[in-house]
Structure formats: C-alpha cells, structure tokens
Length: 207
Length: 207
DNA sequence: GTCTATAAGCCGATAGAC
DNA sequence: GTCTATCGGCTTATAGAC
Image 1 (spheres, rainbow over the protein chains, first blue to last red):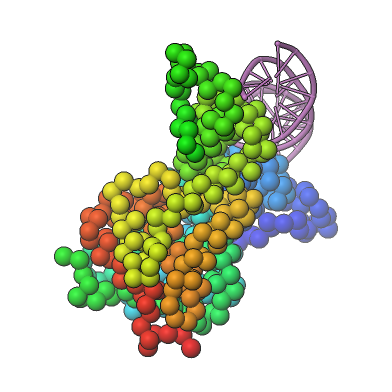
Image 2 (image 1 turned 90 degrees about the horizontal axis):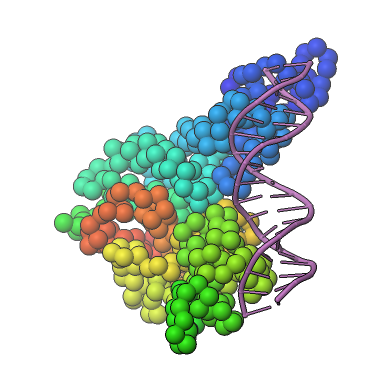
C-alpha cells in the first residue's frame, strides 16, 4: 500500500528495468492488485487474462496464481479494494441525494469505480456472486440503515439501481445525453430522482 | 419466423429425430437464431460459444458461421430480434410510466428481454457497439420523440437508465428487495420515479 | 522470489468430403 | 445442406529449475 512500485522504477542501487521489483513480495503483490483493478474495470472479468494483468504489473502470469490462488480470488480482492472507498454514499441522510448526483456528473470519473467494475463483470456467474455479496455489504446495508421511513430496503435497492443504470448508460454505452451533458443541468435532474427515494411523499407511500 | 422448428420435430414424412430438420435451410437458420437469443440472454456475448449455440439448435458449429458469417453478425441479428417487440415503451405519453413500472414488476419476466441481453453483453466492446446503436434506434429515439417539454433526450436517457438499473439489480444481481418484492407495492414506488422524468415539475426544470 | 516450459482444454473460423 | 476434421491461437493453472 505504501510502496507504489506498480510500474518499473529504480531499486536504489542504480539499476532500473523490468526486474527492478525483484525479490520484494509485498510490492509485487500490490503491483498485481493495482494492475488487476484497472484491467477488470476496463474490460470485465471475462475480458481479461491473467497474462495481461501480469504483464502490466511487470511480472509473469505464474505469480498471479502464486499470490492470489486463482483469477477468481484475485477478482474478489479487487472488488474489495474497489468498494472500500465509499464516495458515492454519504454519511448522513441529508447529503445522500447531493452526493450521488454529484458523483454521477463528476467531470473526471473516479479511476477506482466499483460500479463500472460491476457492470462489466456481471456476465460471469462467479464474478456476479462475489459482486452480489460486496454490493450488499458495502452499499445496500449501509444505505438502508441510513434511510428513514418504511420499506427502507426497497428504496435503498432502487437508489442503487438508479446509480448503476445511469453509470451504465453514461460510461459503458456512452449515451450522448448523459456522457456529454451539461453537468449542472444533469445534477438538477438527478437530485429529485434520488430525493424521491430518500424522502418519499407521505401520500405516495405503498401501504 | 413462421416456421417454428427450433427443436426436433417430425418432418411430415413420419420420421423424427436429430436430423428431422435436415435440408431445410430456412428452418435451420431460424433454429440457430432462437438458440442464440436464449444463450446470449442467459450468459452474455463472451459467455457463450458457437458450439454451444449450435448444439442447442441441433446442428454443428460450422453452420453458424455458414448462415451468419461470424459470431458477431449472429449477435447483431439476435439484438434486432430481442428489441423488435417493444413491450417496455408505450405508444402514448400518458401510459409510459405505467407500462414501464408494470413491465419491471411482471411476475414472469419476458423470455425475450433485450435489457437482460444488453446487461450481460456490455463487457465486450464489439457487442457494446452493436447494442449502443440498437438502444438508440429502438428506445432512445422513439422515447425522446414521445416526451413533452425541454431536454427530452436527457430525460429519455434517464428513463432508460432507471429501466436498465432496476433490471440489473433485480434480475442479474438478484437483490431480494426487488426480486421477491410485493409487485403492487414496488409498482407504486416505480411509477412516480418514471413520472418525474415524463412530466417534470415546472419549478424543478434546469434552466 | 521469480523464472521458463508445459499441461489440458476451449475458442472462432475454415477446408474439403459427401 | 450438412458433415467431420482441423488450424492457429487463446485460456487458467501447475511442475520444476535457479
């Protein structure tokens, strides 16, 4: 974590090159993890091979299985990293709509984006199982605990649905109306949508 | 289309079995197309091989490329079939919210579901390009033409985002709050969400 | 701690027989 | 119109050398 040698750097002994990280297990593991995070987010679980991940980290494919056991276990660790920093869900209920809307219209989307990782990996059943558990633990449960009123789990699930759906159309399918829209205008459009789920009008409540 | 011989049936000459469709090009092509529709919807573009599609249709893999040129062209035809019947988008603006909400809570989801096909195939860049064009032609353009008021393209894109996002959480990730929810209650929750996009309150309109 | 080499299998696409 | 057989390349995972 504290040693950013994910690319080739000098070793302090004057030498540089593909073997610069040689004999530093922790740095190698970290380099593989970061490489996998980028690759899985860009191409999805099935769209990436361990060779590709290893090459980008400056090692051979064998070390991926050496350190992580299998591609599937590597993916599980990547998912935890991607969902660790929670910049989409605010800590207080009054900021939820603002945070979510702001995150969706941010000029530069976060490079570590769990939702993008999810959208490109849900075709694989094993990846989906891992993602289901992570979404539940990192988003669904904290969010429904924060929401006031009845049927919080239902409204939390719809909140996440909107978040994922917009990310899909905007970032994955590249819909021009969302990808290149005026940020402020889009944000004003999104906030009432989220607000309807955070604070549903009393009259519209299902029995 | 008019000849439903996607599975093994008799040929009218008394014979039945795996070769019943032998020497009927149109029926073979149709059988492959239907098999591919099911397989791509269930497992996504990268999750299915041409051998699998061919086996389920009762033919060999070679015929898939014979009739469709390539896996990619087969996928393009499947996408057109999946998006041909438009049961999600109503013909009049007043029914849009009701139709969309009803489709999302239907007890038995349609076997031909373009959104499910999309969600499980967007990891592949070539499949995504095909899907982008089909979504635009079959959903975005008709919907934004139907919506009254300003920024119809933006509201149409968000309408589709909600549709896709709910389908994702509900059908792909299997979120219990959406997958096993009370249908009537969920529908009452969804309709105002769509209605906010179809008829945005004048005061909340972005400038 | 990291390498090369390889096992075992799946992929899409094609050649040629009938 | 459909078949078998195969090409070349990709995949994950592992054995053994250094």
